[in-house]
Amino acid sequence: MRDWMPALRPVTILGDAGRPIPFGERWGMAGPPDDAYSVVTHPERYAQLHEVADALLAHLLATYECEAVEESHLRAEWREL
Image 1 (cartoon, rainbow, N blue to C red):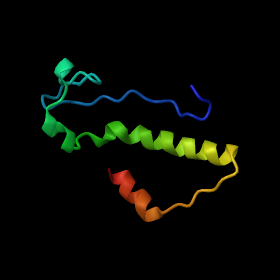
Image 2: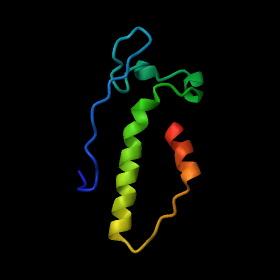
Image 3: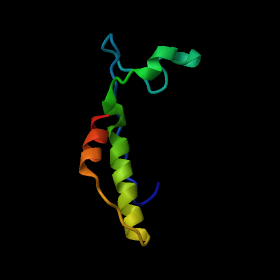
Image 4: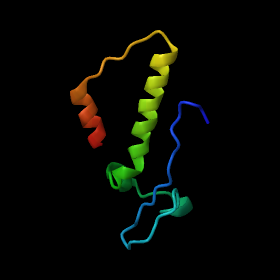
């Protein structure tokens, strides 16, 4: 693991019946139905990606001669996805 990368925590997502869905096993080998791709459910499963992106950005800024410009209105929209 990279020294800048935050530790990822296990996330338990519950299905409609209230039982945990093991990652990648909801639909089995057949994969999800086509209409599942346009549905955003359980956005909390992606929350750690924001932490990783923030850590990566901090690492890049500390390591390379560069700068970042924050567009706060965009950041708020991204956090809602």
